[in-house]
Length: 135
Image (cartoon, rainbow, N blue to C red):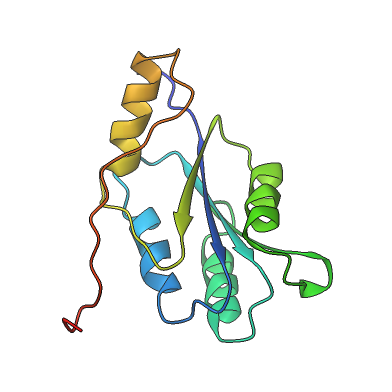
């Protein structure tokens, strides 16, 4: 791969204070460096907004905090659409605020998409766990 395409990673969230920082860190830990992260707040009332704004402040050219007009709660589809509208990448990848990516996820998927230009989308394996405490 000569030129690495930009990947726009979109995390939508609503009151995700407990998990969002780990999701953000999993994007920052990617082995693929050409990523922007769009954090779309769907009207949170907990501390997740402050976490998202802090990361946007720490990484101003890489992480962007977005919210709907008037900080309204418009739902998941409207939030994802806002992220897509503001994205600049050739590819868009979605991550829920209570999930995370393994470090090589974006690198592997970009390589597949670059090698298979007829592919319209790609989906990877999912590992589901219910609790760190075994509950």
